[in-house]
Image: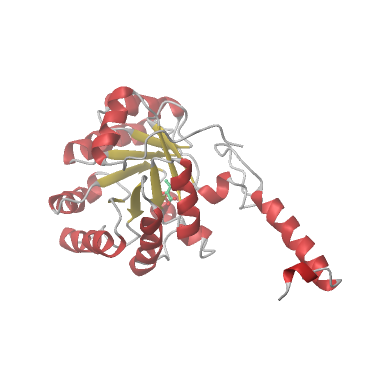
Length: 273
Ligand code: KIV
């Protein structure tokens, strides 16, 4: 049973996120892709719900985040935004929707905002996507940056391994983080980089950082909900903490249902009309 209670139900805005950085309050972010689970996250008091393109893996069974489309992200985003009363909702811009023409990037971000009701977008990369970020911000859309392991570039990296553990890449990450702040990103996700580097970047910036596999020195944490609930049985990277083992529990519940159906124990008289 959780002992965490939400004391204030005011909507989480970019202004509040900035205040949380100033006051040192850690930001709790989790992913969701559907109305039912997003309702539970909002009831529990999570600050930000990320409609991550990890939906490609979690909802669609793809190996990477590359195949998911803008239209699909919009369906997930709209379902989550309908559920979130307090939490801020950010939607990932999927692969190919912002890396080219900045005007196209802006149009795609506008579609996300208009068609989902989300509060902002997240996109991966630093200097190479600066022009797109500028154009999206020019439309008044809040942007969350994402550096370190950026899964849309997995084929460039060659694996999902730790990033920026060598000096040159760490230096580029520091410069990109500074640039994203200067451009106007209001928050920055740091994925799978050394904890010392993440803490250094977090201290250097006036916008908050959110870590995943980046240690405790960031302004908050994000996990994929299905991973932290243990729904992805067998997925156990070092950075992940399992808060439940719902995968095992579901298999057990379904097993008991099957037995009841097979031996006629369900439905009982009380469960029929
Ligand atoms: O897509 C996603 O879920 C993400 C988080 C892991 C940060 O980008």
